[in-house]
Image 1 (cartoon, each protein chain N blue to C red):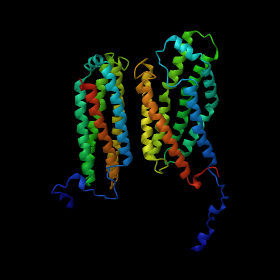
Image 2: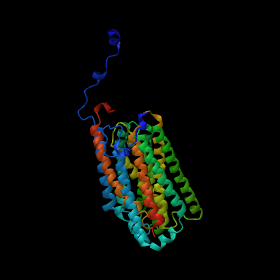
Image 3: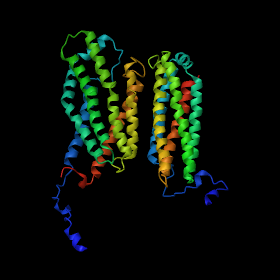
Image 4: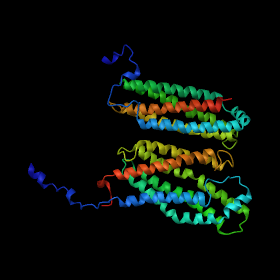
Length: 203
Length: 251
């Protein structure tokens, strides 16, 4: 029961329990390579979007007004909440409280799974109303970028499932894998924030 | 106790014949055909025929006729169809390395089949379309326009055919526990195939960033692809070099 003695709140970072020659990065360094590169690629797409938006500002503004801002906002909250639970779950797993970690990751997974469902409620009425990628350049960007992001979310959900399996499966879970997955999930989150700002909010 | 050990079959390691010095010669030959093939590819596509960078989907009828009926285009298509057989060699180089990975054979077979479907649609179809247009003079301009569309749509719109192949390749690298190829290359491959999916909109737009000569569908994907292809070859080169002799299959 010495576990209870976490009294003077050691901050999350300074108690790496398994100090087996860890690098400075949480998780695998190859995942950081992926995150940086992915942000770079999306960054280039965003710049291209802003450029073409500048070419035909009115069309983009009018089209943007037809987006469902409510679902977009709810999805932002959902994703941020999920990310919060991923962060809490990771620190629980690091501190060796695996059972708490599992619970927190399951909540994160549930929040994350709500994202594609809500997205479906966003896409279907649009397509039924005749708004498709072929409508105009804005909607092509909208469907391509949100679709690409949705692929990232789906992959992230698979990774979260593996994390839960990893935490439940073994007595000594692979913390590095948990951190790697968490890193990916936070990237998905950041991408959505930029995407939401650019596609839904930017005037 | 020593008796039972003595009856065991003698270790067979000494029985192997002394290996030739360059036991990887087959792999190196296959490997070096690849840069040759891609150089030829580049020369034929760009300075010889100007098929690439892709011409605009909204070119005027006379521009299309000029392009489709040019003599250089015919030569380019003939060369490419002739050298098409070299393409499988690059896949042989990949496959030998994937076979060393600790992953399911499904991934290996996906690479084989994916590369076949991709190459047929993405390379043979356009070569025949462009070659056919250049073969005989006096075709009706509307027929030439259709062959032109067919050629470019097959060439650029088919990039998705390669997607599963590279997805399997990337997944094999990421899941592999033998460290045959570096992990980050697996992630790089993921970007490569995701940008190939971006080719789908070329079926919708005839101008702008999502047309077949557009910034999003062609240029970004091409920049990523060319750098990726070069890096893959450097990594494959190192993988062949590091492959221990006892893992070779051509004993």
